Length: 222
Ligand SMILES: C[S@@+](CC[C@H](N)C(=O)[O-])C[C@H]1O[C@@H](n2cnc3c(N)ncnc32)[C@H](O)[C@@H]1O
Image (tube, rainbow, N blue to C red; front, top):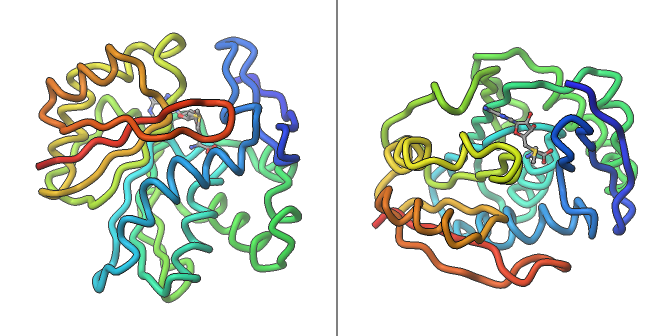
């Protein structure tokens, strides 16, 4: 996949895919979008969890969501089992162009970001004693799991670019892979996407979005 590195308005970098005319994150700010949509509206729901939080991300991309989840888990003293699917992994050269390590301004951030990208595929790896990662180089359309996850970060490209990832079939798989009471968060709040999520069984709410976007969606498995 041909990709270019670009800088967003909060100084954090992201990637642009000319072939799809899609950015990996909002140009208003990659880091602030990830913090808002996935950490504040998703992961923070589990701040009192006394068991590991099982998270599924579609797709891993730059690993920014995983990196921010790692630091939030450390701050909140939570354990996380993180599973990520990615069909088009970044090369090491692309990973080295991302500035998240320097923006977070810690040696640890640089080390963890590198680890997240470098660890083996298909195996559950303990990145630290409180954060494990299992990466699958696969297509969301062929992945299935049963009541494994507490939380899903649904971070596919926009429905206009990848309509085949926002279908009833994919959301039914996501629904089945969540534990009862589990949550899915996504930046996309389009009416037809919310209707598809509801048809898959989710209770869907619109909540305030990150800067530059009025709303986002949070969906719950009853
Ligand atoms: C909007 S980007 C977000 C990436 C990532 N969450 C991040 O913060 O960098 C969408 C991601 O989904 C991946 N992707 C696209 N099609 C996919 C598919 N069919 N199955 C799994 N991942 C896919 C892309 O390669 C890309 O990494």
